[in-house]
Every structure is written in structure tokens, then in C-alpha cells.
Length: 251
Length: 356
View 1 (cartoon, each protein chain N blue to C red):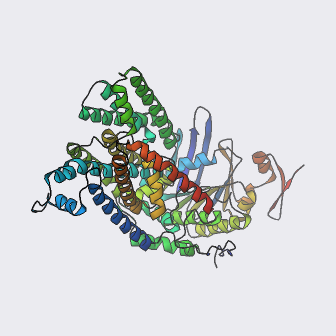
View 2: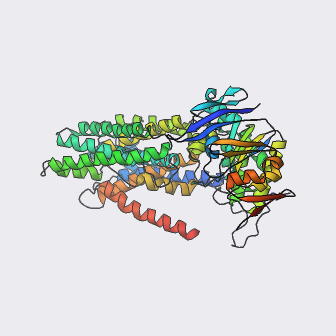
């Protein structure tokens, strides 16, 4: 297994946020993590990225605990795409993407021509090569999210962690990005994203992991996991699933 | 198929709005900055109450390295080499240091409103200088005290912030504000108990900043300190770019942000403390110059660092020229940088808002 999470506990102060999360995942999977606000999805991600240290349990990447990885070693395994990117400084898109190559550069080095070349290839692949010289504060939110994906791709990590990557995007861009994730997992990456959209999960996920109260309460194929009982538990909402569509009952 | 079909442009702005800072343009601008800097640097030796013709200035300066026939007057040489030389060099170095420190701090804190004094170095140095004056130290003693307390203040800020783990940059800012407040209170207390006939004016004058007291003997300390602290920042210029995306993201990109932050703070503190110890408090340079430089060459530190050095150095030489020539009495340079800096900053904000 490329990523195993074993009985993970974490608490910020005294109240535990994660209370025994366990699952494992393999390359080539597209995993959606569903759960209500504040259930610990972001905390789980920050643990996987090595930003937070769990109080109990273990996270293994390729069989090795992440506490044994250096920051640079971990960055070669796991790339991260935040919910949104609101840059303060107006770097060009090409420069922003090339920041993903930093882990392969010595401390005092600047990007080489081949680093920029790699960035241009990825931009080409994502269909945004005409943005390369634009300022990253001057492009739209959907374009910026693609730039972040490009930045993660040049990092050459095989695990991609995404924290609600499309929650700030319009309907069309949401689906385009989700579809892109689908392609990336088909190319052999392990893509794990948190989502507030069970409908997207039904449509795109290989596997859904549901989190509630700091634990994973269900895991499996989206068609099996996303059922009225679970939706009621997670969101206190009565729904019906008909032909792969979620239909909520609202009063 | 294009994932994002190019939007039709209705604002009148070309759809692929001009390349974002093309390299040629940046190189040209840097060359112009070098030219302007050299011009201001040389002209400043001529102007003053005692005018020295530029041709003589060049001859006198080169006479130190080339065997030239002395066809200038003795007092011209004294003015150029002993009076103006240390002042102009110090102005250039102080301007460079404050601007470089400001530009790296703004990136590191991901906040364009940050200036070099954010971690308490200025407040600490002011306290040291006030204490030195109060205890009747000589000029060297006062500078040393300012340097030491400035460094101690930053050290205190960093160690307190280390206990605030959830958001290290916010921790630094909060601790910096508190440490600054403490040292400022200490300075106020010294002013309260200082002798109002000589010590109090000396403290007040020091706090306004001035390069009038710089001597050639200050340079062997100032020059190496500034260069030793600028070099690591220049070498790490790409990582300085990466850290502007924020702590968590930079870490996920493989940057050891904690280590990088410590190196940046160490370098910035060394050079600003060395400068403040010699010049007193000079505000606004570290905030305004990085902004202006970013407008000229963009935010890539490969260009932003040299641009900040040239603009900051040139600007402070120019303002110091004003300080010593504008009126019959010397005007403290800190007052002038505020008079020039604040309106300029307002202009940039208004102009930026107008664009959008």
C-alpha cells in the first residue's frame, strides 16, 4: 500500500479532533473524503503533509513512517493543493508553477532551463500554456486552481492531497477540475481530496471515505457508501438516491 | 481542446495582457538604476556648503587607487575623503540594508505592509542608544549598545514566537509588537529621567536619525557586516520567492521554512542593527522602497534584491544630500524620509486603486 493511516489520533488542545482514523490507499485511486464541517478532514491532511504531528497512531508512505521523512523527501512523495490560492505577490504563472521544482534544486540554486521546460510541458498538458507569462493575481480563480495543479504535477510526487479544491469555483470549472483529477488518477497518481459535494463523489470517485466525529465511519465504492443513512448521519439531511442522483428532501 | 477557452475581452484590455515583466524590460530597467545610482553617488560628493567640481571629485577618488598628480586643493581632498565619503557610503549601505530587509520580510510574512522594524530591532536599538547616551558613553559605545540591544530584541521576539506553534509568522508579528512596546517604554523611561539640558536632546535627536556623525572609522564595521548579511539572501533568492506562498504551502513544496526563516531573520537583523546603530532610526525606507522596486522589476527576488539595493541606496544618498544642504542647519534624515516616504506611499496606493 502506498499510503496507510493507522489508528491516527490528534488533538489541538485537549479536545481530540482525530479519534482513530484508519485507512489505506494505493496509487491510481481517486478518493473522496466526505464529512461535515469541522470533522477533521483538514487536520487529517495536515498530518499527512507532516505539518501536524499526530499524538497517537502512524502514517506510512511506501511502508515508511512519515516522521522518518525529511521535509524534502516528503515533498517528493506528497504534493498539496490548497482550497484556494490568493497570492499577495504577482509572480508569473510560469514562476509559480516552477516553484513546484524547488525540492529538486540545491539550497542556493535558481530554476534551470530544464525546470522551466518541465513547467511549460505541464502547462501545455493542462491546456493553459497561454497563461505562462501572465501574472498569477490577474487570472481567474479556475485558472489559478489549474496553476496549482500544474505546480503539484511538476513536483513529481505520486500522492496528491487536495483540500476542497473546487469549493470556490463555478459549476463548469468544478466539473472540469474534477475530471482532470480523474485523469491524473488514471495515470497512476493517488489523488485524495476532501469534498462537500457527494454528487461529485458519486460521479468521479473510485472510493469514498466518510468521516464523522474524528473517525472514518464508512469506506467503499461511492454507489455503496453514499446512501440515505450515511447522508443523514453526516449532514442531518434526508436524501434519496435515484439513478446515481442525490435528491434531498427539504422542508 | 482548451480547458479554459479564452474569455472574450470587453474591458478593452488585450486578452493576453502584455507579458508579465518580460526579462528584457527588467534588464533595461536595472541598467538604468545602476546608471542613476552612480550619478547620484558621484554628484553627492560635489554638492554641499563647500562645492567641489565633479572632475576634481573623480580625480580625488581615483587618487586612492591610481598614482595621480594632485592638482586639487588640500581642503577639497579633506572634504571629499574625510567628510563626504563616509557619509555617502553609509547612506548607500543603510538605504540598501533597510530596503533589502524590508523586501525579504514582506515576502516572508506574506504581507506588503511589513517593514524591517517588525521584529523589534529598531525599538531595541533605540533603547540601547538612549541608555548609552544616558550613561555618558562615547559615539562608539552608543553604537555598540544600540547594535546589541537591537539584536537582543529580535532574539527575544524569535524565542517567544517559537512557543506559538500553530501559526509561526503570526507568532513572530505578535511577539514583535510586544517586544517593541516593552523597549519603547524603556526608552520613554530613560527620557523621563535623562538630564533635560543635554541628554534628553541628544536622545531625541538620535531617535530622528542622522548620518552627520558618520566617520571613516565606522566603515570597517559597517561595510563587512552589511555585505556578509546580504550575500546569503542573494544566494537563496529562489527560496525567498517560494516562501511567499505561505508557510504550509512552502513546506509542502519541500522548503524547510523554519530554517529559511531563521536565516532570513538573522541576516536582516544583523544588517539593520548595524545600520541603525550608526544612523539612528530612519523610517519608511524599508517599507516604501521594496514596493517601488517591485513596481519596476516585479517580485522575483533575483531582480528585486538588486533593484531594492540600488533604489534604496540611491534614495538615501539623495535624501541625505537634502538633509545636509536644504537649510543652514542639518535636518535629521528620519524626518525627511517620512516627509518623502509617506506621500509617495499614498500616491502608490491611490494609483494602484485607480488601475483596478
